[in-house]
Structures are given as structure tokens and as C-alpha cells.
Image (cartoon, rainbow, N blue to C red; front, side, top):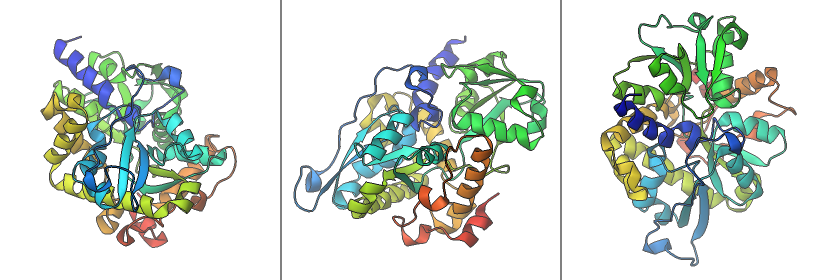
Length: 370
């Protein structure tokens, strides 16, 4: 393996959305290497630096490990936006299955989780709701080298496709892409990479295509001099990307604090979108490792910022929830046998804690859906 790409692979594992948002998270035994995650200390300022009247403590789960992809949370903390909202915020890093469970139990107040994790969780009785969208564009993609002859889903027939395993959002996305061309995984050769090494396998020619995240593997490969084509699922089914979740109990008892947290985070997203370097700086302050290769981190963050938007956010702002897309996802995931008991959009999501401009409406949702 070329030395340059080996170093990039280390960053890839650290920054993978699979590891951070947990949308790829299988059972813990199949997680990417990296050791036991540890809590990230709060950077709260003096206004809410310790428990006092008017301040609310919130524990926020951000995923497997610190990542520049969580820049809005780090930035809002460093700028005092959470403090100004009367919040004492502490971050923790957990894998997605743990986050969903811990939020449902109330051990973590707010977490970042993939929408495709929320649907089966609520179907199984875990009392959580999705309260704000972070990734307006579903980040999972199938990628292939430019010039490989793969430019559409139909071109995947008979090809070797690398993926971490037959689980999670990438597997759901891959089935949807193949289905749009009248194909199934049986029409391809699936090669599993439990260590999340499918990007390296693609770079080395061991597979023809690979699942990944638009703000991760393609960025890393481009930095290594490998141009790629990306196949997106949005035109097939509007799968919900990662966003903020909270327990129904926390929403009922601590709704004002959660609303303040969402407001501060969305403000940070807007400001980082206007000045991405500020997000890299805030991330490096949280975790010095994220400052070790600023050019790479900036490239990853810029690709991440692109996923925050869709046609609905252009009108309604960041955080907007595409309720029509959620219904389409329920329907599709039901066909895959991933929804044990029937659920409704109202059980899964709530717009009550979003700023007024980000409230979903059926008309707006339909217009924004691909």
C-alpha cells in the first residue's frame, strides 16, 4: 500500500461517518478499530460553567470518535452559543446502537443518529424521536473509479462491490440503487470489509465499486490522486440522513433546553457553511488530532457541509425535516423486512422543536423530495 494512502487510511478510519454517526454500526464486535471511546470534556463558559439556577445540563452523544464532521457542535460550544442558551453541554462518543439505546433510556439527552436507525428502533418500541435534520442529503454512496465504466446503477451488474457488511445504511442504500435498475445484490459479487477497508480495496483494484460516504472515501481517494464517480440514492428513495434524536420523555420534560440546543447548533451550521475554516479550528480545539492535517480536515468538512443541504433546506433552512421522505423510507424499509411493527411518521419525527422557518409542511416536503 503506498505510504501516502496508508496515512490517509488512518484519517479515513478516524473520520468515517460510519464510525461517527453510527449509520454503518453493526454489533459492537464489528466496529472499526480505535479502542474504547471516551467522553469529550465540556468547554462551557462561565455563565453556565457549573450547575446554577437557570442552567440545564445536557449530555450529547456524537458518535464513535471525535471528528471534524461534528464541527457545528464543537463550534457552538466554543462560541458560547450553548452557554448563552442556558445550557451546560458535555459531549460523549458512542457507537450508534448504543446511542439509540442510551437516548431511549434517558442516559444521554440528545444524540446524533441515522434516520435508518431510528425507524427500526421506534418500530421495536424504543421511545425516541428525530427532532432535527443534520444531513439533508443522504451521505451514503456507491463509488467507482472514473473510467471504470460504472456511471449508473445498471453498470453494477456483474461487478465486485466492497462494503463493510450486509447491515446498516450503506447496505440499505445499495439495495435501493440496485433495485432501481432491476438488480439485486445477487446480480453482483459482494465483498465484505468489516474493517471498513473497502475504499482501499477500490484504490488497489480489488473491487470495482465500494459503498462509502460522500464526505469520506471520495475525499480521501481524491487526495490520493484517485478520481471517482459517485452514485447517489436520493433519486430512488429519500432515505433520511443523520440528525438529532431525543427521548420522548426528555422532550416532554426538557423541551425548552432541547429547543435551545437545536437553535444553537443550527446557528453554528450556518456560520460554518459561510466560513468552513472556523469549523476546523473549533474541531482541533476539542481534539488536537483533528488539527494534525488541516488541509485534509478542511476538505472533509467542506464535503460534509455540502450534505447539510437539499432543495427543502434552501427554502426552510437547516434542520428542516422532509416528512414525505420519511414516509417513503418507512415504506421501502418495510419491503426489506426492517420494520418489525408498523410505525407512522408522527411517531418517528417531531418538528415542534425546530425554528419556525424549518417547520416541515406536506407541500414543502413533496416539492423537496426527488
